[in-house]
Image (cartoon, rainbow, N blue to C red; front, side, top):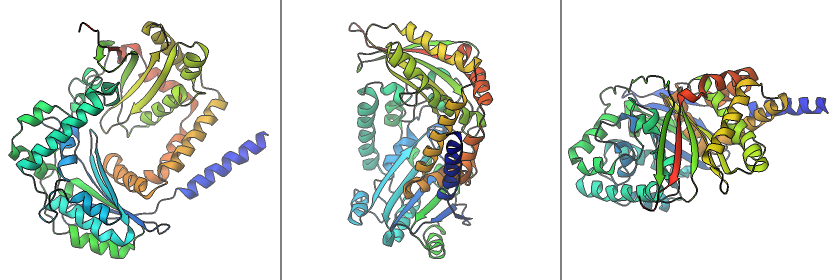
Length: 440
């Protein structure tokens, strides 16, 4: 049986390495735009994506929410795409598109049938070169963003946890990660039109972006089209990157947040962790899986199945370019006190600190991350996103092929060491997340 297990694991490792190998070509235009091309002719689709190195952390004090606002604003239209027509053009050509913003970057993409590759390149070049930023667009998207905030945060159960608006402000004192990605509606209301134009000019230039084209393409022809559509776009001034160091947390932070939309409270522990590029960030991701990934995970088995003290348990990392956060918590079942959940979570942390995980648990963990690796780039959209992200935030595109090697190399001893290094009481926020009292 052990021999079969060995050969099964060996086969999975070889199959994974072969199946996930992503070939790519990269080059720079004279204006500083970095371009990555990935040819995969297995299906007649192509994704064109542009990632800009601007996120919520780049916003000026008193003007939060700009990066996320531009995620919406840059669909308003361009000098050659009439206002309100962006999505119609995409749909009429059998495509789909979207955009998303984090603390560190903003990403726009279209996926079309491959015979519409040139259309995708033209539209993204239009977004970069000819956006129309005017009062009517700003006012329209201001209302869109306000509604998004109401639906996803203000009126959504546990919205402050999901979008970190009730967390980051406690664990970051100096770094702009303290602010939420969606920002302040008051800041957006107070901004003048020229401020939006200045923000675009500063951050949405080719030398602050990476263009990825992935899918059913011919590399030589695509390279020529990229140069044709993007080569003449002028570069912007060099962007000064945020470089703010936080003082280590040395005493427990205690806080209480209230939510009008919940009836069941939550107990949360939040730790500040290192950059997503650090090896420890990968180890902490593995610790999350050990604690709460699936019904066989430690916290689920102990708190949900065995003790029946928790309705739900959670542990996950929020990896970011400068610092990350590690969040773990639980929702009580019935009349269970939050202090009981806290004790149970601390017991699981102490087990990680004092005992190596078993060989069986370690192998199960490795299998999970092998499977995650296989599925992470199973679509052309996923590959395009990964190529852009690894280039911009990790400065190593080939992580798309070799990141699994990092997980494979993590030892049981390192898992124990990371728990001792980061998951300490004097280095965390202890948050009681409660239903709003009726009298409040």
